[in-house]
Image (cartoon, rainbow, N blue to C red):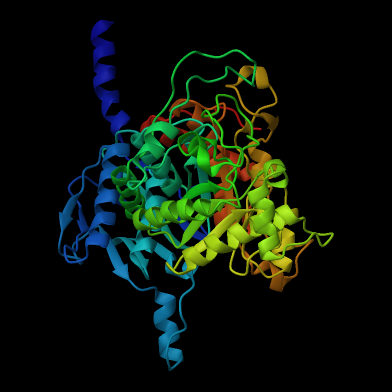
Length: 553
């Protein structure tokens, strides 16, 4: 009996290493997938990927693909300079463009951001051909192939013949991470970026400052991060009145920030830094109490919520301070977008501050029935910041409170208190990023059973509701007004998220859901179909080693 069993195992063992087929039904779903499952191209170890050493960007994407194929399947591919003999080829330019050039004369129209990301993948008897207009298109194609791979050691990989044509729906596809309430290591930020890249996101909104801690190094003000990043202890739970008794701190040096910027750029992600002003500033006021209306003292906040103490709008030193910070921020972050926050700024102190009221009088501000004096005072600060950033070639983003005193001309609104701010801004022909808390705040619970999950801020936001979001708001905006919607973004706030495992649990799989909102046409979306594609993504997360919510509602 033992001999028979050994023979059976010997015979069956090779079957465990048989070639497995890829599945092109990935997340986010490509725009067009035409598959012929009766024919396959078999990718085997030792086959070559065409390698162009003269194009560092394309070479990097080749290396990404080679690494991911080996990590997920065990199939190791070679690099070859011979495009004709390669099993996987990279070709610059799309066939549709070549046909258009033949039929039309004259200069080609300028490509939109989405068109620059377009790519095609063709699998036939000659192998796999990836075509794109720009290197970023190659990266998107490589990610699609990565997600289609079987996740197990293989002798070979079978690719059914296919024609994939793809490009994103929105130019702006963002995800936010609050590292001010809780500090996260550089490696966690890199893993976060890897996950964004996997899902086709191209904007990382990095939130640096809060009442509970200042996390960006300002070299000309060295004490700001050293002291402003440290709180004496942290409240346990939801402002329970009980504290952990542990000093808590941490900040990112400018060198670390540049490292993150470069890491993100290799994955075609822009890093948008946020210094929240003029509120959410108690971490800074702790170091510079002269910048507050009362003079302090201002301990770095140990509880959650919003401090009444904000920067003094009437103190001329405030503007010097803010421009110093934003100047260094611009030197570190090349992003064309710089976020100044502008949200949740209590104005009680301004109403009772002689300096603030004197400044309002100097500016000739009066309550017009629509905008209070204090709201207009914040708009003046916003305008000063916008002008400062514009001189450096940057665009200012603010949370939707920036509308309350009248929005500055070039400001971009991030609509978070529902969709109302986004509608108002788009109707005024201001650019908008849609991130309403009702669809995009992933610090909310994602399952009804709140007690069975890690602590969240409250609320209920399942993946199904994230998936249902329509950022263009066709019932509220005309087609012309919809053009001002840049795209959607999810936000992860971290009052109750202290560790990387918890952060990734909150992110996944809701990042999968928002990725199809960001990438796919509205008529492509089908939540039931999405659920059938999700299990393969979860296997990828297992292979990466990140935590996620195993259930979806």
